[in-house]
Amino acid sequence: MEFVRLKLAGLAALGLALVLSGCQSGDALGGLEIGGGQGQQQDERDTITAGELLAYCPSVTLSASDAVLNSYQRGGDGDPAKLLFRAAVTDTTRSCTYGGGMTSMAIGVAGRVIPGPAGSTGTVRLPMRIKVYQDTTEIYSQRLDHEVAIADTAGATQFMLVDRNFSMPNPTARNVRVIVGFEPAAKR
Image 1: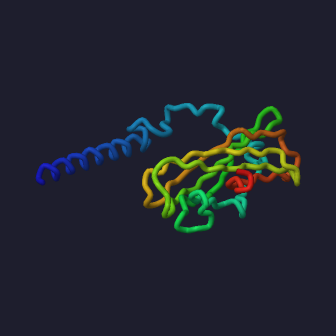
Image 2: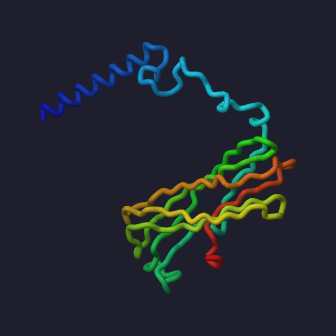
Image 3: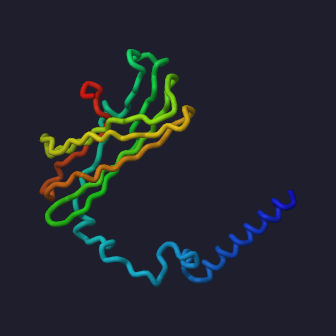
């Protein structure tokens, strides 16, 4: 027990020394050589122009009817005792890059998978659908079969996926919408 206390005291002293060395350098992360040290030059590609800052990047919305996916054992649709898993989209985001008259989007989706009473460990496949509309015209539709490894049947497993395949000519109006959700059962 005494050995453990001495070991912890030594680690605490080392941590304090690192913090103090960073504070004295004027660059809190410089002493550990991580982060933005003063001697580092910012790459010109990392700067944001005023045009990019003010540019239109379409928002992403969640399909209300396809935000949750329930998967049942064969022949057990709707039976709670035969539920394999429930997956839900919990967040969406996007980022846009601009160049050569084109807008390219990275569309991100995050969520979780919760095993049901009939669930087990292993890999589940989530059929995601990303659609982009300009006014009422669908200009992009991509199905992404995202695999999620379930390591434990108690609790939720988080997932994230990013689709970087969409680009379009720079829009002249703010009339583009992105909708994400699970692939409806009728199309599977």
